[in-house]
Length: 384
Image 1: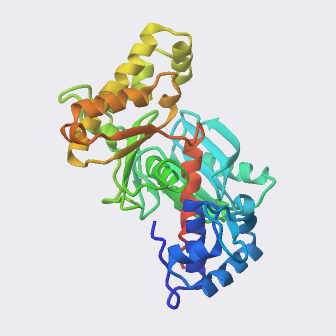
Image 2: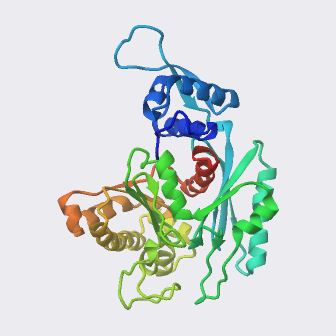
Image 3: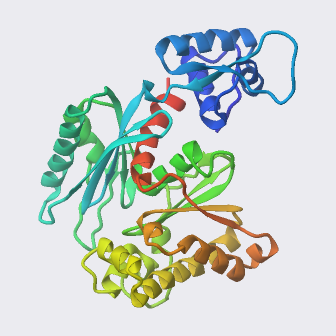
């Protein structure tokens, strides 16, 4: 996140977004400290913060707590007013839609989940998603300013499409174009794991880190990179299909058209199939009930993930990996297993240890991730 401003050429909106980003990353601080970080003049900061206070985006929280005594007036701490702006975070897949409110500080409210009927065609699916979001907006007691959507699967960022797959007969789904016609609000769309990485950078374990990976363990496995404090992008989709990296050459066929993909051996879907369970909730319950077989299968999945991750670390020696997703709630310390295996298997990690740490964003991390898309692009890095 670039936190340096310009005193003359920048517009009011850009400077306002800059001040909001400084407070997001650093927490409550004085006007003087904001001026030092942004390299804007004290007069400019006074003007900008006065406007933001009037608009309700920031508030004064009393005197700044300083380690040493100083002469003169005490500085007043400024902080974000979380409830000044609400967006809706929507996490979509072909199986479930999850939706919830997310505010400026990444705090959530009113989380709901709805299963998607299995027999829907493309048009029915789009209509279902639009109706569900519209109904949700109409029942909220706050004004919703924008919508962020994180989608399972590969996406076309430029066109706002969920990419299909010829092998299993899925067409491209022009989801953003359709939803904009129905919902009449700004919509920000991305792959769900890219959204999670952005959330970790804004609100989580990556807040003070320039380079890290967000590793998502869910129905499928995904990853996204933040490099030099920016979300890494590459090609049409933005990259991040970690679950389609090869675990076993000539292994199980994958719907992507390849064979031996990690998803086929270590994802939520693979674990459910191996344990012949009804769904992941049954797996979690069996682990909670201390069933040995269920625990071993989940632990083995973590080891398989670490095998592939260790190879990746040998190429891109990241110092920090943040792990999130439903599988981290299984009652097994998957993060510790992955950390141990990666640091034992990776040549570079044996030279300089990689920190593998669990996300602290909680069970609604997918909603926070989706909401982060809208917050970032409509507030914190507003395009003018």
